[in-house]
Amino acid sequence: MIEVVNPGPLSTVQDLGRFGYRQQGIPQSGVLDPLALIIGNRLLGNRDDDAAIEITAGNAVFHFLEDCSFVLMGSSLNATLNDMPVHRGWCMQAKQGNVLRLKGSQYALRSYLCFAGGIDVPQILNSRSTDIQGQFGGLSGVPLQSGTVISLFKPQQIPVPKQGALQPSYLNHIRVLPGPHLACFDEHWKCRFTEKPWLVQLSSNRMGTRLMRDDVEFFNHNIRIPSQAVHPGVIQLPPSGEAMVLLADCQTTGGYPIIGQVIEADLRHFTQLGSSQPVYFEFVDINTAVTAHQTTLFHLNRINIAIENNKKK
Amino acid sequence: MLNCYVLSPSILVFDGIADKSSTESVAPLTFLAIQQHCTLYEDFIDIVPTANSITLYLRDPKRREFWRNYILEHYLKFEYQRADATVHCVPTRYGGAYGTDLAALSTLLSQSVDEIIMQHSAFEYMVSFMGFLPGFGYLTGLPPALHVPRKAVPSTKVPSGSVAIAEALSAIYPSASPGGWHVIGQTDLKLFDPNSTHPCLFKPGDIVRFEALND
Image 1 (cartoon, rainbow over the protein chains, first blue to last red):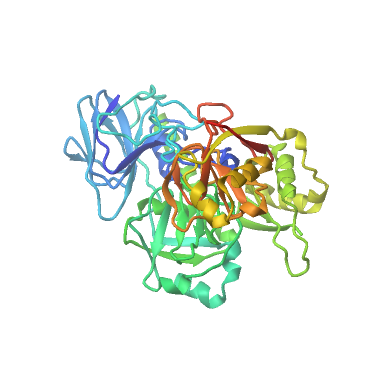
Image 2: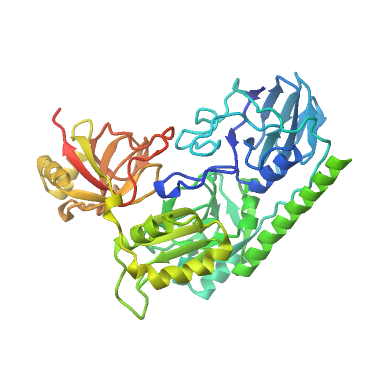
């Protein structure tokens, strides 16, 4: 069992997300960085879809009420375990009574705290993810509170081997497939869209990263489109011209023009992009998206091989 | 004319936007028919229809070209099976504390409150598609006399169960949420229950009737 001493601004229980319910208006939820969760879970001998805690911005404190192996993925947010630094991507052994603190970092935004065994909360609609808007899933449908106690499943593998893995870097260069409504704008517009960085707004959250630019008037428009399905990675352009990249908690349909779709391999970068950080966009073709996704899979495969080899030692 | 484009390696979108070569648009039921047809196969993680589009989320991007060609070639033969549709009766308390925007709407539409209630509850609606909130259905079939733009200033909190109208649509809020539709009444019907195996009462294609309750 783990006690939440301080959850910081937002800590939620998330797994890989809720699938198969979009047509009923039920969002996907789940971690913003599936790759981080998968690597963390594999290092601990968990299933890929085991639930972890997604911690936002830091200022969070957890108290171990039992001995437990854990790994921090995403950013470490300057974490310490009983005042010793914790590096991301390394399996750690916490003892009963240990305290994990995540101070925060000016360079990163989110951390994933994965435990051996995974978090024991009921599956609601096939997922342990917290739907903050819908108030279901996770721990009673709400973000973690001070004093919340989290139960863990029994680890599949005891002891958890001492091992670590590298995550691909987080970048702010985002590759985008052209969206259906890009055709409403001319070539000059496309150049303007990609020539300068967009800045992340403070109002961004798990539903979407809202973007701003000093020349945002240029992107004002009054194009109306009928509602269509939207999903994480869609770049919407509301009439104000302030582009928005939809993330895991987004609605399932939307009526703003869709100017692009962030490629799957690059969507995880938004996990770490906090207020006023610059984001650069580049339009690419579908082959680039496929190749980038394969690169991600290769990375995971290499980690798998290394973990298997480590078991034989 | 059905148009198809690829949004990502595993996402196909079909819509009925008329292109230069044709002026015919695609009937809304076509998208529900495509949905019914695709549901029979294991190839899709999610299938999301709207009033004039459908988005297919594929398990395996390698199946993309097959489905693109198959649907474009055969969609005219798909028939929407009405047998799948459920008819829902929605007991509604109109006006007063339940329909906080009804009085203002009466002025806006130059119709009496009773006329609005009578019109809204006299017609049959169809769940065109779901979205916005879990269990929120966009209901088509609002009589033209009640068509009205969304509120200029959205409410910060529309109560759960609110029956509302905007533009050519009606809807019921399954949970409390900010919203810009005109609230004309309220129902006790539970539209979304995450702990149920069928979490949402409505599904695309269902028929909805409103029944005015007297307090």
